[in-house]
Image 1 (tube, rainbow, N blue to C red):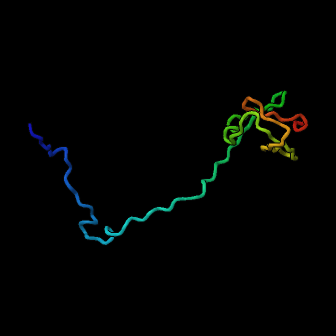
Image 2 (spheres, rainbow, N blue to C red):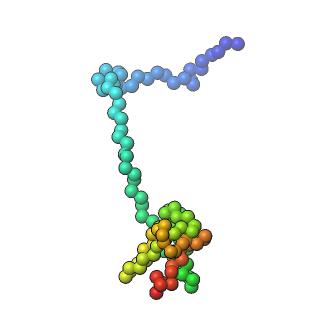
Image 3 (cartoon, rainbow, N blue to C red):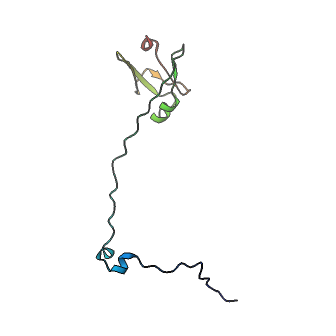
Length: 109
C-alpha cells in the first residue's frame, strides 16, 4: 500500500505580500518589544466590616492580599479619623488564628 496525498487537505502555497513585492522590509529583522522592568501598580483593595462586641473585624480578603499570617505581630495607631495597623516585629498586638483583626479596646474608644 502506498501513501497518497489528498489535495483537499493540503492548503495551497501562498507567498506573503512582502515576498511578492520584493519589499525591503521583508529583509529587515523584526523589532523586539521592550519588556517592562517595573511592576504593574496594584489595584486598591478595600474592605468594610462590622466590629463585633469583642472588637473583631472579619478581614480575610485584606489579610490574604497583604500576606499577613495568623499571629503576625502588629502595631495599631489611632488618628482622628482612622486606625492604622501595620506589621511590627516589636508590636504588642498579634493577629488571631482566624482571618480577622482584633481592635484593641483603647483604639475602639
